[in-house]
Length: 254
Image 1: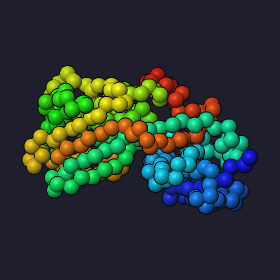
Image 2: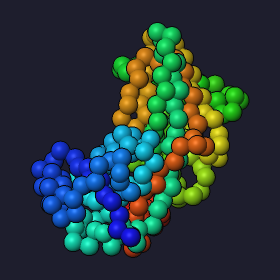
Image 3: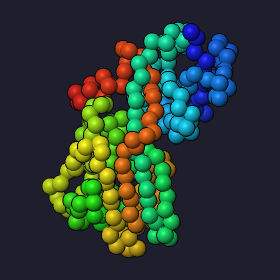
Image 4: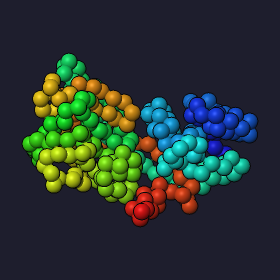
């Protein structure tokens, strides 16, 4: 049975040219009638696609036409229908972020990669870290801190010297960003059911922002993060190019 495909593409010249070619060869099913979404671009565009179309519940098959393509398959248009038919699904559970701001408002957002806190000024952030309502770090002095999903562990988390997490490991990475005190604390690996809370100490003098993937909230007071038990997204990968193997292989890159 042939798949009804809805194509989306980033605004780069290469991706737009590939979009036109794909529509010419395969047509373009309206989103509400499609069986699968094909995303043409890089990892940033894939994250945009997941956020924009997650409510549809459609699997997403990406092809790399961008700078970074960790979440994408190789770009080839000729055998696309067969590749989608053979593709293996990888189920991702996003992180849910609930933020309290200085103004008293509450903001919620979803992250497929990570939720990160960063200082807004030249002064270091002071953050209290709690797990399941138990304080684990009374005061972390740092540039920031992040909580990463396994799928996002090779992104910002890895750049901050956090661990690479295998898919299906049911754990999250808690990683400080340029920590100053405690000097020897380099983060933790947490069970995925853990609820994490960050409290910003002295938030008027030392303002901090929180970002869920690319969605930023500034002047925050407190952030609560947990892995969703209800929302999921399905990414499709070629059998010879699946995400789990790439995450495993990344640990041996020098």
